[in-house]
Image 1 (cartoon, rainbow, N blue to C red):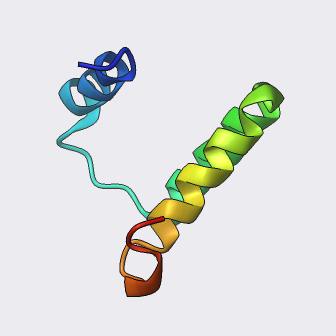
Image 2 (cartoon, helix red, strand yellow):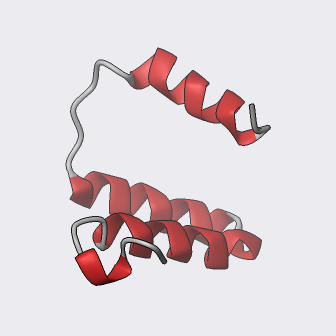
Length: 61
């Protein structure tokens, strides 16, 4: 188990029943980066990966 799995598990446990929009998620990611600019690159990579999940050309990236 990766260290980050703990945070992912907590998210699933605490908010797993909620429904959110991708707009809400994008706003939370922007807010997080505003508060923690050192995480801009990882958040950008995560957002890009999520945005391209259905792109066959980027499946291995």
